[in-house]
Length: 412
Image 1 (tube, rainbow, N blue to C red):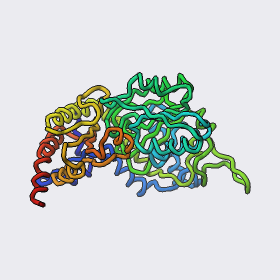
Image 2 (tube, rainbow, N blue to C red):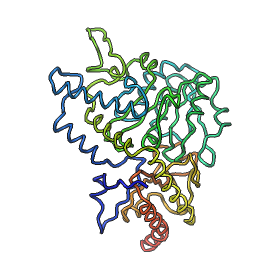
Image 3 (cartoon, rainbow, N blue to C red):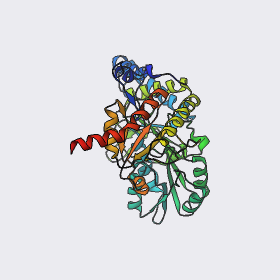
Image 4 (tube, rainbow, N blue to C red):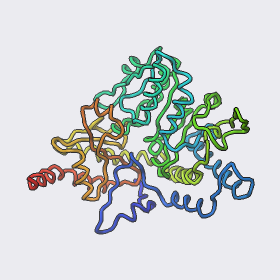
């Protein structure tokens, strides 16, 4: 098992002999290791200049480090650096694809297919495109275990499908979707694929060429990196034909009073001053992940996920959404409710014991409606979580119904 909590100052600072702090909201954002915070500090203390702007030495050095960071990202996913675009986050990356690529591919009557479980960031852009192009949204419905069946794929992906958008991992159900199968099915009918890998980049292997994807996106902050920077990867042939979504400084080679000539990808998509410090720190985060090893991360989280699911199943009145048993396609994101208890109340009482979980709709309201739940509690794991923390969480959770009920009665 991994033992890395000491590398994260937030975890060190909020823990003491008299204070418990168990962070279980990693699907929302992860804590940052020392190396990432040090990289941010180093940039602003020693490296700070605007890349691709000045001819002086500091600016040239900043440009070299910015482009080196791009290569680190590319190497991590086995891609070409010329296909890596720095964005603010996954949301912006998907919007870029929707506006600069899909808008020019979709016509009236076409279909955009996506799972009912998609995060709003991989849903709202497609709703907009569908309205503007008079296209149709088609939803892949998950089964009782949170999976997408072959029959559902065959039924929904067909001759009218133009875009298939899918998450690598559901941020509510914890399901690892069969992306290779989905992509092959999409390509068999001439459709393009857009993958949201935000919940997978820390926890599994992401390689667009092996997957066969056309576009994929992920965020730094889900993988130990800083907030406010994300990645879009796209096939070079598609990036070359796309026009920029945002326009402004430094993404052009020439400008006249009436027109502009754009840079080649990826720079033509990076208008204005970017976040070079974020890129530099994200590269440090990816180096840290590489040193841990994705296989070791998967193995560590598999143990914790099994422990978590087994413990949750023993609590009376508790319902798990998605597969209640551990499986190879079951990740460390687990949503649940306790009969008769508000998810918000459960989260509040756990917080009093130093345990942070998420309660709400998790930016996936169509899925919650489909599941018949107004909201859920959600636990999401990270490599720095431990078996002792899961045991403590389960012990506190088992006492929650009694605690809330007792407090409610006293309040009356």
